Amino acid sequence: MIRKDYIERLIEQLAEAFAALMKARREQRAEDARQLIRDTALTVLGMEYGVLTMADAASTARLLGHPLRVVGLARLVAEEGALLQEQGDGARAALRWGLALELFLEARELGATLEGEDARVFASLRANVAPTLLSEHYQRLLAGGPPG
Image (cartoon, rainbow, N blue to C red; front, side, top):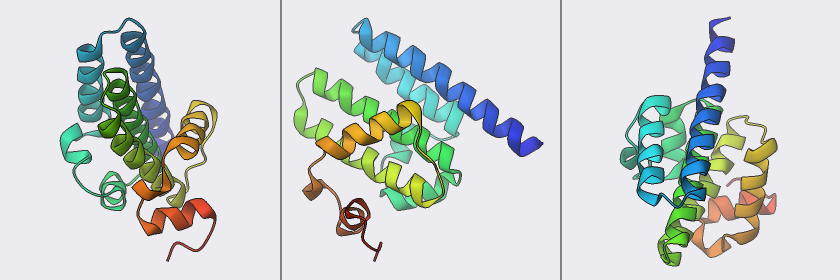
């Protein structure tokens, strides 16, 4: 029962955070959106955003532990990429999107089933991230081969 309550609360908190983040982006309040990303990482995922995005995706996924937490971070990183793109920093946006895609792949390896908006974001990243931005391990996962 505690686990179910935790998962339901996590889903609810992430949904609220993403709704607020989308609103800030629609209203072109980039700094507010950045702050929401940082706040969500700290309050919902329990760690500072900068710390979570410093390491490789596999290490970060192990640190977060639960696949829903990894999906939540993947979505936050994808949103940061969108903010960077909107501000004309395509190179940094592409790097963030690459990390977000790797995090989604790690979440799937942990057992996450991507549905709804999570699946849409994953599909968009998969279609738009250059495979060369990913390590060979993630390139193989995307191609359907063994993780190696």
